[in-house]
Length: 104
Image 1 (spheres, rainbow, N blue to C red):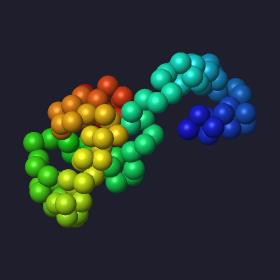
Image 2 (cartoon, rainbow, N blue to C red):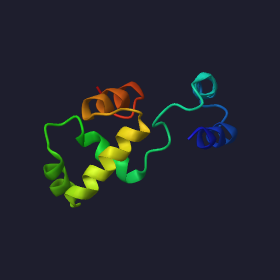
Image 3 (cartoon, rainbow, N blue to C red):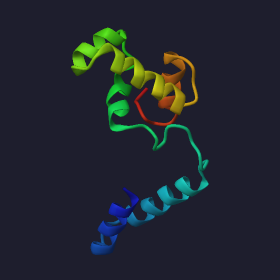
């Protein structure tokens, strides 16, 4: 995303504060931990499941909504837990919120 924004700023340097904001984002990325769990390791399928974790839905109910097997949902959830370095659904929700992967 930063590369895309760089390209936009390169083509349109007159876009006001975008260049400065982009520099701020770069500094945040550079100062962040190099191995922040979950930041870029989640697959598309896991990211699709992530918003369902904070809901009241069970894995079988989530599987019905996503048209996937119960086993697939459970496997993806366990993979999310592992990648976020947590051991429960509630911890995964909190870690995902802390990382900005899902809203409050």
